[in-house]
Length: 355
Image (cartoon, rainbow, N blue to C red; front, side, top):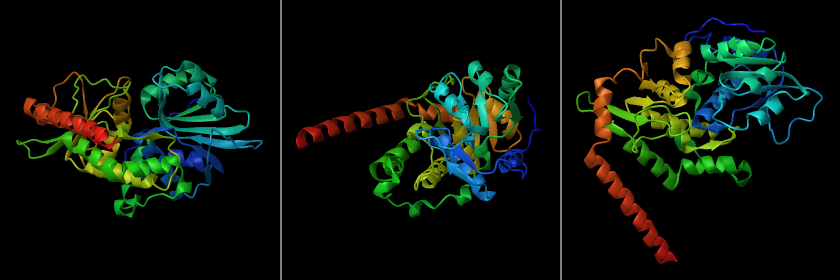
């Protein structure tokens, strides 16, 4: 069974209305965020904001110790998990289709090239599709499950609700390794390293006076022909279960602060683009290898004045071409390569001295 919802404009009150309506009808449910990188944590945090905003009764779902109940309701977080690039889909499917699962909602997702996964879903499942190609792909394979058009949950993130970064405190020992890893990323030497890479990926364009940052992905979904060793894959800085931690909201504030540093962000990371949009930057989106960004753009972002989709067949705007040339200028590259070489040898010398 399928049911297509009308397209809703981003930032309108009705943006998540259909999703909230479904969630309200579930009663108490377990929430299992899609594990992954910073972008996936953004989705998980946005979902938890929705739950709090609408007073939805939820509990965290731990796949290592599923609920010992005769029946329960499961909500799986949004993202791009169900594509051939990433393993473990069969393991996730086992949890989504357990006999004890009375109902299951999959929050707005990108799905492609996983026929057996889609065909294994049944009438208990409701799947929100964040692009039309996902919707059409799913309904062509499965008539039992309810498929709905929706919007990426990250669009609903309220950055103003994120805690001020100066309130970050070291987590207690009982907070868990994930919270500790998040804290260390945002403090001390790791924090300085992150900001170094963010600034290195940013150049000022003399003709416009604006700072342009290139935040391009380096993983399996990469499709951009342009490549630079000075670009910065922000989302890849962290990965984990995306369960709520005492440092998680601060991690999103950290991400927001980094995307707010430049005036213009060029990226093929969907949630770097979305966070940059939330922080008021001008965003140029490049597509990934299976059309995720262009699909979400058409569904939810088209018409936003500060968000643009760059077609691979068209030349970049002059400002971006100038920024790209400056990013990869020979003298600039020589400076950073030399600095990297000097640092490497200093670290080796220090280890020898200490040893």
